[in-house]
Image 1 (tube, rainbow, N blue to C red):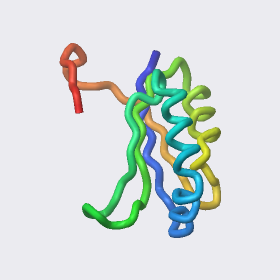
Image 2: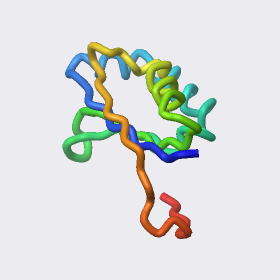
Image 3: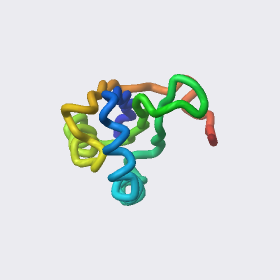
Image 4: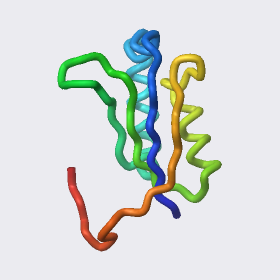
Length: 98
């Protein structure tokens, strides 16, 4: 298993998609919680509109990561770009709870 980080960048029209599909998106994250270990929206400052998102994945392959990303109800290619990077945690034996 490899750990991956996904950075999402949203276009302005993405807020409408977020409002419309939020229950579907949250259910999707819940169904895949074993692989999408952490997820959340990004804002320029507290209380401002969302401008993107961040996921931490633990999956068997890059292809699986892409499948999870592109099957998410929030994924609309014209409104949401992503960058997928593998990640190695410093101090791998340290347990972190957020």
